[in-house]
Image (cartoon, rainbow, N blue to C red; front, side, top):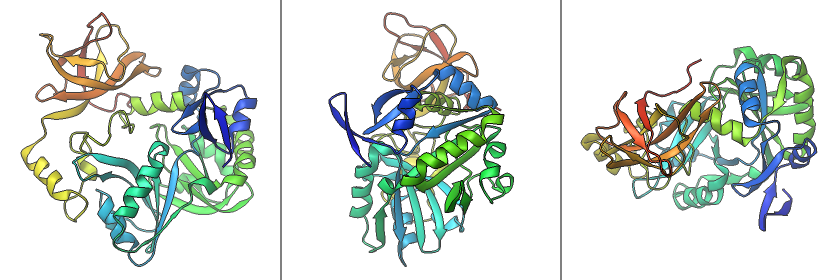
Amino acid sequence: MPYIRAMEITVKQTPLAAWHEAQGAKMVEFAGYYMPIQYQGVIKEHINVREHVGVFDVSHMGEFMVRGEEALNLVQWVCSNDASLLEDGKVQYSCMPNADGGIVDDLLVYRISEKEYMLVVNASNMQKDWDWIKSQNTFQAEMEDVSDQTALIAVQGPKAVEALQTLTDINLSELKYYTFKHGRFAGLDNILISATGYTGAGGFEIYLPADQAKSAWEAIMKAGEPFHIEAAGLAARDTLRLEMGYCLYGNDIDDTTSPLEAGLGWITKFNKDFVNADYLKKQKEEGTSRRLVGFEMIEKGIPRKGYPILDLEGNQIGLVTSGTSSPSLQKFIGMGYVNKPFHKSETEIQIAIRNKIPKAKIVKLPFYKS
């Protein structure tokens, strides 16, 4: 991918950067890439995804191929979830524990075949992830970074099937959640279409050659016109994922947070060995001292990352990791780590927002229930 100079930082462009600029998108540097934050406004874009269909350029994400006789062994070792449960055409959410009890990254694992897997990682962690997996590859599995050759378009919302079906020979209505197929799409052969996403609105993620991204994007926009398709930026992607209580790496999870603290015990399987499994198993048995929770504001105030979380006596019991004004719920919501026993649902807390301390309460995730 070509490079540009923006805000005195050298950043990469996705193959669709020129299209975004031509549409008047607000562009910023994000995770080393020049990305659209919004086009017509985060609220409009957010609501359109929930009610109709939106399309996101997420070509900044990283894709690593792991192949060979020992491919599964490497994936099993670096990932907390049990990839042996995967069959061809299935996807699994997982994380990569580090040696200190934290998380290298969260990722999706695609089983292409018995001897071939695709790992989809966060853009901000691409080099770190690659170096980490390579350092753990005592199995001599073949690794290939195909990130620069791969574009990724996410089409999300209840009208996603209708918007895309004329473009592909895959029966999208039969593609179950967290499965994928290869087929013809927008005149291109052997395109991977995955029933995954980061919005909770349903839809698909389409992996295709970077040099074909623009033509495919324009075909998607045209095919989706009758279904109110609109481009959506990273700001709407963030509010959508937060309404669902999905973790964002760098905010809600990082190198210092364990998957058990983050509520990711369901992707941490101790029926197999993996990096730092003994430590995490012990942590599970003994319990954690803090927990990632969702909360909604009782009193007015927008929680932001880094704001202190207090008990009703004013003692600090945690920190906000993500927060926003929810377009769907018209409430101020957030996530953060709190000390036990303040993690229990309906517990009242306070958020230190500048010179005010409005009340909030712990709620069960997700915030948005369709």
